Each structure stands twice: as C-alpha cells, then as structure tokens.
Length: 137
Image (cartoon, rainbow, N blue to C red; front, side, top):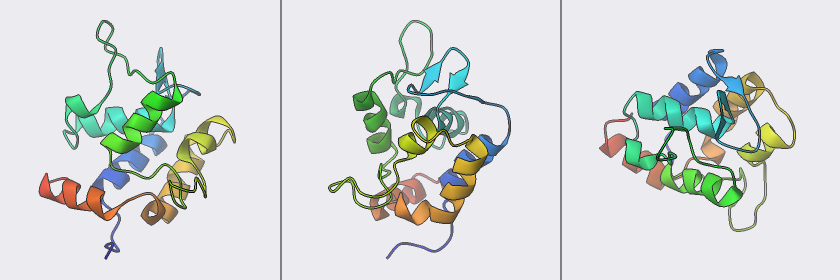
C-alpha cells in the first residue's frame, strides 16, 4: 500500500521548483541555464545525493543534462521510478509532467503545487521502496 506522507525526494524536487534558482526551459532537460521540470528533478536530487550521478543523463563534454528527445526524457522517469502520466503509463492517461511544462506552459510554481497535491499519482511502490532503502526518505 502506498504511504500517505509525501516522500522526501518529491519535497526536495518541488522545493527547488519553487526556489527561483532555476530558469524554466522547454522541450529539453537543460538548454544552457534553462531547465524543464524534470531537469530540475535530476539536478536537485543528484546535488543532495538522493540519486546517484549515474542516474542522471549528462552530456560527456559539457556536464549539461542530456534530454533533447522524448526517449531521453522518458529514461529520466524510469531512472527515478516515476510514472510519466498521472493515470497509467500503459494507457497514457492523465496528466504528463512534461506536457504540463512544455505544452501547457505551466510555471514551475504551478507544477510544484500540482505535484505536491497529486504526488501519489506519479509515485510507484517500487520508487518508494527504493528511495527508503537508499536512505532517501
């Protein structure tokens, strides 16, 4: 059964989305100094060692996040053990976090508030188990 308390990794991610420390970008994890909401997750969780650097896709030469195409962005969901859609990934139903950022143009603030209210729709039991086993509670 999925726990009722928001996991620390979700709190950290949404805290950084609200911090004003990241400029919002679109259609890629990182473009120069702009990030999509998933790019913020990668950087903020890696900085705090809640995920390993190997869990994040970096370009080898410039240290920037790699994620220009949907395949690379979907790999981030897999590495973080998150569902891409708030419904089911299999049926591609519900809200996609990438769509909220890229297609709908939601601000980081709006995405963070939404994610804090609906985190259970994106988190799987597998991700909770992994985060808590690795001390990321």
